[in-house]
Image 1: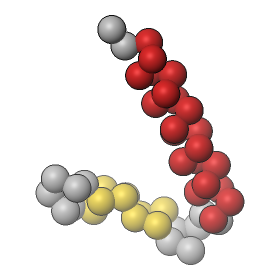
Image 2: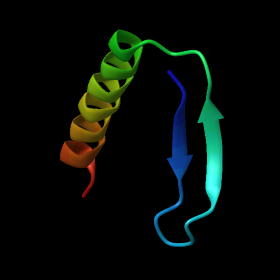
Image 3: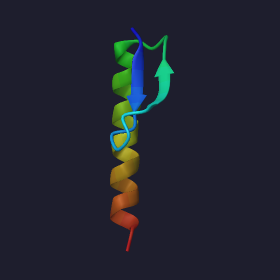
Length: 44
């Protein structure tokens, strides 16, 4: 399944990910969430 990243401010297409499984997408989102939580807790 293809997924697209859209800039919410402009509505412009940033990137299309053509060959990614739902499981790979969920893993990527989970990893991004963990990274954000780590960065957010260390920002001063």
